[in-house]
Length: 139
Image (cartoon, rainbow, N blue to C red; front, side, top):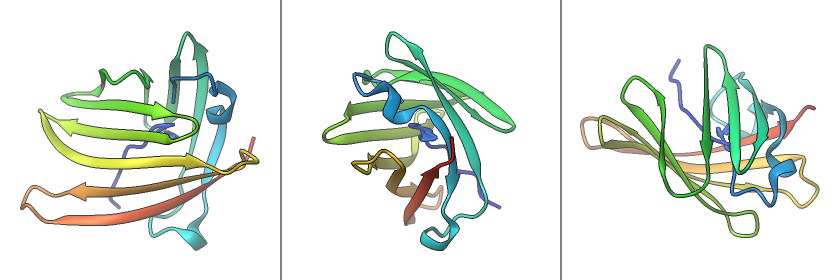
């Protein structure tokens, strides 16, 4: 199974993320809606840590980041950069060793119960794959 990192943000993320005048819109436990997504069976948590920082837990990893346009280390050589706003949505760029491997745009429904992530995976061979994942807030 392929692993993709989202921020809520993350991203999350769960996708799930900060810039958070809209902090509470990201908080929660998010479960993938498999009927509307090609990816299967994931859940992750996003926690607003205050001051624009978010904490994502997506077993077996967890990481902190903010939607301030700066890269944040996820693990090993992987970084996540998030920018945007609650009104326009949040853009994520995931890199490994400086090479872009995922770009995504994350939006939330007006009731705050659904997070939709549209993105592109960039493969080492130069090919790409588009995806759309729909997440439902469980808690």
